[in-house]
Image 1 (cartoon, rainbow, N blue to C red):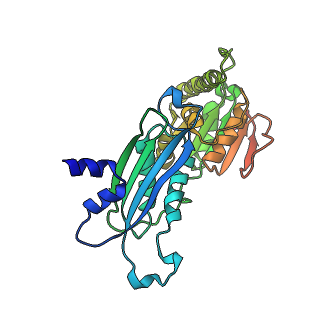
Image 2: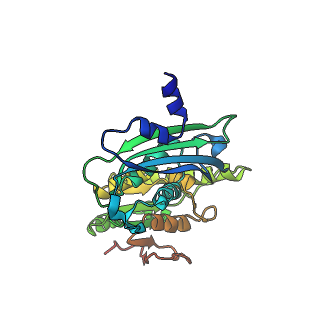
Image 3: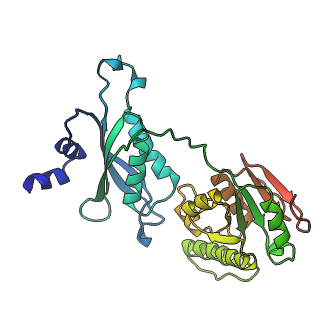
Length: 307
């Protein structure tokens, strides 16, 4: 029992060695890699950063004499830190478990990687380190992952005038004929929004006002489904579902969130379209946004169905 406890609290390298199989494997490791990041499910962890410590061990197939002192033939240490940086940059996360899974998955994309130990600890949430540790192994042949192999949706911004009009169904009919994944953005309804003195509280109120209007749209056309997570959006794009974006979770979880001012729903739609790598943003009846880098934007008449 004492040896098991020692292994549990020692560096993951000890667990790697203790659970090694008969086939010899090499190991590369990252020790005490500390990053300041915003993470956590509690309200006190939002809007502030904390220190996170990473310890990672990767078991790799030995190359022996094939290395020839060539850095391109090995699994570089940089691949480990890149996996961490990529997972942290994707979105704001609530759980260390989710972060650990994403890091392990990305490391195991590497053909040499056979097994990975990931330990992540929060250093500022109490008198000691609070963390998780996972072990994941490569299963079967490695699959080539192409980050560009993803849907590029058509994002549509609908103002309240369109939502309330008799043309809504005809517009959606025409949009469906395009055969592209459809993601709809709306602004808040034309009613007063409660006001709060705290900026973060007001941000949540403004986002919830948009979500309420998303439900109004969904109630007017049963083809439209309100969606708030990236996972649901990805599923919807692959399965032909028309999604109306509920922005709270994605906006609040974003590492580099939108700079849209309060009430500027069109600027928020531009940011969302960029995040989703949209093929095009269709803007109904509104003035076109001033800034939309790397995004094709087109204005559409409120009265005529989209062609």
